[in-house]
Amino acid sequence: MTTATIALDVPRVWGGRIVARPQTATEDAVREIYRAHYGMLAGWATKLVGDPDLGHDFATEAFVKLLRHIDTVNEPRAWLFTATGNLVRDHWRKRGREAIAYGKVGDETTTVDTDHSTTLTVRDAVQSLPDRLRMAVMLHSFADLPVATVAEQLGKSQGAVKRDLYDARARLAPILEGVR
Image 1 (spheres, rainbow, N blue to C red):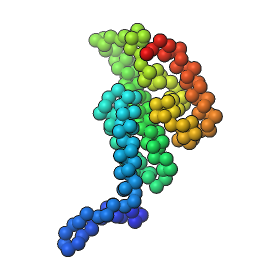
Image 2 (spheres, rainbow, N blue to C red):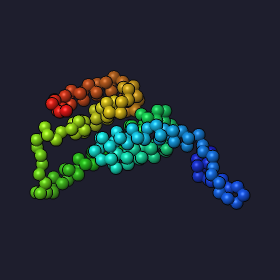
Image 3 (cartoon, helix red, strand yellow):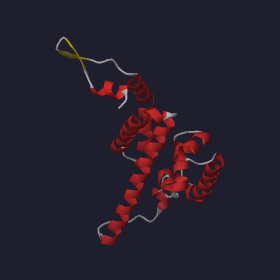
Image 4 (tube, one colour):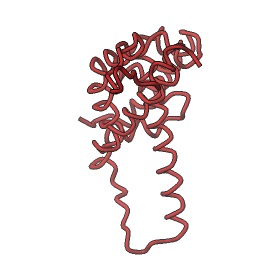
């Protein structure tokens, strides 16, 4: 347990009263990161999942994870967007499994709109990409992170990320043709 961790857990007692303890540098740093990035992160997650409550939940969970790893994070913004992107991706996978399960049950009351020209969104198109392409697109195109940062966050070379983005654009172009 580090000194900073002990300071977070133990309040100061002076004259028999519990008094506010001084903030540590780590707490100040996290507060500053939160002020700078939470709104943008929650908005980004909300646009990806289409639900403001869930978007805020994902952003909050990413900050909780950041607190656990703050000593090892070099670029908090990129790290937060990657963590949130992973939470969104897990959510999409779960929804896909649920849809398959409901399809097996054979609910006759649900009608499926097969005319995707009226219902397709960019989010749906990106969601349809394979995992290896989806995260690169989410981080580069939607979180506005540079290729070098995306490569670092995904543990890939810059060339591999550029190739993933190229492949993603090639797959998305025919799907999104005419979508506004």
